[in-house]
Every structure is written in C-alpha cells, then in structure tokens.
Length: 548
Image 1 (cartoon, rainbow, N blue to C red):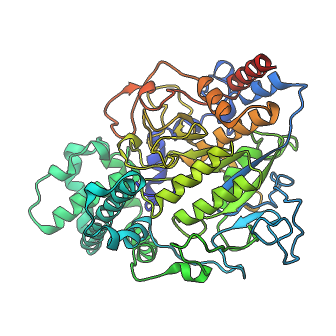
Image 2 (image 1 turned 30 degrees about the horizontal axis):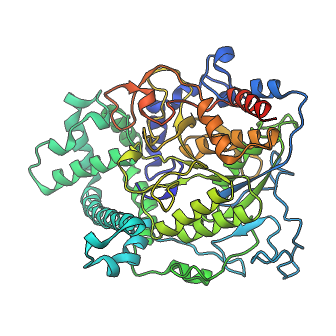
Image 3 (image 1 turned 60 degrees about the vertical axis):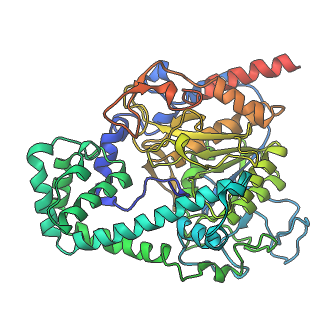
C-alpha cells in the first residue's frame, strides 16, 4: 500500500459503480443522504447519532476550535462553508511581512506547500515508490542490515517495499501492453471463463492458477490479478463482461487515462519539485505560498472533507456538518499527486504551531521517503497536545502486516493522540465494513461511516462519495465537537472517549481481504466499534463532571 490521498477514485472508473454496489454502497441508496448522521435505535441505521448528541448538548455553550485540514485546496466560497475559514488575526494580508514571526509571510488562512512564492505549482508528481527508491538507493545498496536500528531499520524495510513495488509496476506495464494490443482477444478470454465463473466474484477466481499456453494468456491472467488488487473487486465475471461489452472503448479510455499519470509518476528521470524551489531532502529550506485556494487547482477532496466537519448547520441548505463552532485551517500538500513526506512534516508542524486542536489527514500508506521526519512530526503534535485523525486507506488490506504506517512515533509505537479510522456502510449486517477499507486489530482504532457519504463539492455542488478519506473527517468532526463543548479535555482524553464510547455490535462481518469468510467485527480494529457522537458527548460530560 502506497501513501496517497484516500479516495476511491482509482484507475478503473468504468467499473466503480458495480464495485461499490457489491461492497455495501448500494445499501445506502435506500437511505437518506445524510444516513451517516442517523441513530441506530431511531432509524435502524448505524450512523453516528449526531442529532441525539446535539439534543443532549442543548442549552450549553461551545467554544471555538481550530481544525486543520491537511489536504488539497478548500472551496471557501461554497454556500455551505462560508464563514468557517480560519483567520490568522496576527497576520496582515498581502503586506509582504511576516507579522506574527512564524516563518510564513501573509499566511492569513493557512499555507500551501506545493506552490512557489509566485503561486506556480508543479503539474505532475513522482510516485511514492520512485521517490523512496531514488532517495535511499545509494545509502542502502550495500548496507549492513545488522547495523540498522530504530527508524533507519524501518526506513530500510520501507525502501525494500518501494523497490519491490517498482519492479511489479514495470511488469504490469509489460502485461498491460500485451493485453491492450488485442482487446477483442481479451474479451474472448473473459468469455472463456464465463461457463464456470460467471457468477463468481473476481477475488474468488484463481486466475493465477489457470493454465496458460502462451504469453498472452499469462499476461491476461496477471492483468486480471492486478485488476483485483486495484478495485478489491467484488464485481462478478458476468458483470465485468457486461461492462466490457457495453463499453467497447474501455481499453482506450483506461490506458489513455492512466498512462499519462503512469508516465509522470514512474519517470525516474524527472524532478517535478524544481518548480517549487525546494530540495525535498533538505529540511532547512522554507517554501510555499499563502494562497490556499487557487482557481484551476484541485479542491474537490478537501472541500468534501470540510463539509463533513463544518458545513453550516443553520442555513437549511445542502448538509449539516458535525461541529458547529469550528474554523478550518487549510494546509495544502496534495494537489498534483502523492503527498511528499516533507510537505506532510511541515504541514503538521504548521498546524500545531498555529493553534490547531485537531488535525485531519485523509492520507495513508506504508511507503515514504522520510519516515523518520514524519514520525518526529507526530511526536511534535503529541507533545503539544494536538489530536491527529487519519484515514486507514482504501486497499482492503490488513495494516497489521505493514512495516510502517502513519501515526507511529520515533519509538515505533502509536501515539495516544492519534486515531486511525476505517470505513463502514449503512448496513448493520455482514456487509458492515466497506469492502475497500483497510483494517487492523492492532493498527486501526475504530471505524466510521465511509460508503456513500454525502457532502460538499466545489461551486456549490454536493455528491455522495466513498472512501476512508471521509471516515476520518467524521471522527475529526466528533473530536472537534467534544473539544468545543468540553474544552478542558486533552487530546489523549478525547481519543479515549471516542474509543470507549464507540458502538460495538456483536456481529460477524466480511473482512475486506477475504470476502468468502466472516470474522467478528472486534477482530478488525482495536476498539471493534463505530464512532458515535451521542455516546461520546455523554462520556465526555461524565468525565468533566468528575474532574470538577
């Protein structure tokens, strides 16, 4: 699993509707758009009981809370997000002076770490694997691994994983080229599988063990296997065949759409960072721009996240966000590809230094070119009592099997001030856990709704999206709600409350990596539960009363 923005927008958009329909999102089409805010007892939907939480808090006063969104740009002009932008009151806009002496000139609403001082940004980005490989290949080429300790040992394992992934990507390109050369033959190959497998799901078909008489068949088998990994497919062979037949331009659209990205991300000769005026390996260099919402740049992901956390609850339009007294600090790191570790490090430290109580990072993965510095940044947030909520990932993978993931400190342990979140559907059944969601009994703290989440998009638009990218902000919103109404709570206490108060159904569910099996929900995360705002405010109230 590589580090990337955690959405379910992947290389095979034509298949997505079928994939989600099979993975639990179809359940939500019968539910209200804001199903994720529903209450199980009242609505028979495993939402977060948000209205019940506000009923409990009725008549109480809240205090303003700063929530930092480390992501791409936020459309702050959106009708449902007006008035929620963080304002650095110590800074005078556009005077070219660092009025508050924080190292960032004119940072009135936040900071963009992927632009230069003239607001120009890179138009492409290298993959995490490429950057990690190029950064460490010389140092680790002939290293004595017995001498590696601590974070350097972790970085070495991450480097080895990056190298393995790069080689695998090269092989996939070779296979894809063979399959692409004759898409009609590929369709015939699919049809040859239908008699025995039409009703079987992709991840239930043993493609790699099928007999292969020639190079084409071998490539097709392996290409299918990679397809399964990409979409965590619960789509059936029959559905895939229907999709291919109904979309004769599938291959051209797929390859033309993905090859451009692939050429950029996996070109080991390009330095896309040069336009920023930064050296990715020199942490003494300051860089970036105070302009955090530029037209023409990506702002869908962060705008969606912003709506979940803080959309206006009083204007009777669009949606209602979770927290009603927050300001959103925009810290931009991911507009043009996989987020760089240096940007992540600077963004976390910027958010902490400028007053954020909660940080949302809808990014995850186990590959990084500077894992030690990222760990140090998480240490820094922990030391300053700032809660970081991050998304688990959309690879349907067990994070317990990884060498490294976000949230670790330099001691190799996960912080008490950090929450890792997986995704659930609207169905209180075996399909409760979203089919794409990462999980881990030791590494993922809890789950939150993540399939068919309805929120804000740029230009006053709204839509439903899938991904742990949106489960994380739900937990971040609940954390902000707790901090707002119970301001004396520490980050550690807020995490403990959220975990303790989670709804924990005694239920057998389908694990994302083994769709033919069932396991107790309690085996897929530390808490075995789903975040619940009503339960959380009750527990927070009890704790604060005891401490008075």
